Length: 265
Image 1 (cartoon, rainbow, N blue to C red):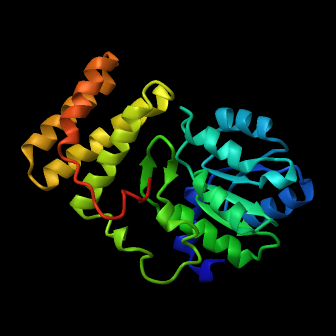
Image 2 (image 1 turned 90 degrees about the horizontal axis):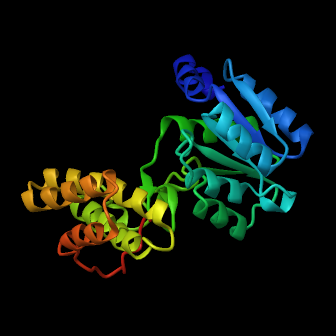
């Protein structure tokens, strides 16, 4: 496997010691489990339903999760969204969807649910190898927003994409792009403080940390100060009025651009 590169195999195996497969088809689970065991000493946990999968995600803390599509009667997208918005230790760990239903709707649905990779059944060992390498050795930025929680969607199905970056906005490492995205998420989170308070505050905390890093990178003391104030407010569980005041203190750094703020979030 992996072109005989033992070191690569060892690095991958270290990041998937506990694997959860959520699929009602026991034959498919057995086949996938056999293939995964070739990677190394991998513990395989099987859940035949979403309810059982959620319970196992809470108890075994899987390092990698495989899910099916909703058409099988096992809605992997729903499970992925639930994990992403939870407080579980595994909430940011890779999720791969395996399904025979490789329609555009299924693929984009998986992406928007926070799933890392999509693999069509029947798949070859090489297909599996590419997905495992992508999710274990090529980590993607994490997006902690309100409408979306999960890996950066601009790199979805990265195991198969070999070309250049897909859009102009993909210069996402530039401080200006990072600043714009973080502030847009802050604005969206502010609007969700009443409808989805837990995720809104989680998003605000994550973006405060990101904005502080951007401020330090561009040596903007005012931005660092405003981001630090927001971080302290979210960490301390301060009242909504004080939280909104500190959000307002950051909005002056937001500059509208031509693409309407569409991006990873």
